[in-house]
Structure formats: C-alpha cells, structure tokens
Length: 76
Image (cartoon, rainbow, N blue to C red; front, side):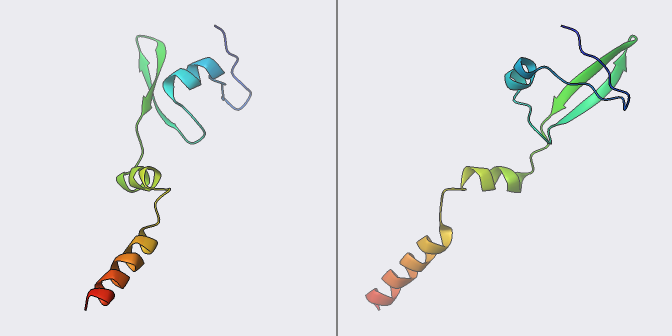
C-alpha cells in the first residue's frame, strides 16, 4: 500500500489500518527511525481520568447520591 507525503510533511494512514489499530482523531503515535525506515507506533495516551469518564459516562452519580441521601433521611 502506498501513501503520499503532502507538502506539509503529512501523510494519511489508510482507513483499514486506522480501524484495525483503533486509531482516531487525537491518537498519538511514536515516530522512530530504524535502519533507514520510519516506524510509527501507537501509544496509549488515555489518562486514568479519561478512561474512567468513558467507562462511567452513562452513570449519574449525583442522582445516585441524592437517592442514597433520601434513604438515610427516611431511616432517621
């Protein structure tokens, strides 16, 4: 598969490769030169906070806390 370098030094990674590696906008790659070859390595740059946010994005913790607080008030 061939890709072409733009006048700004940019190249497009083919869609099937991006999908197979799970690359998306903002993904970071390490670039190295190894024996006169360019090596691109995806790096997992997701912070712990971002990972947790994504994991619990459908949960409403405030609503859960309010419900728990109401139960405590009712029990008193």
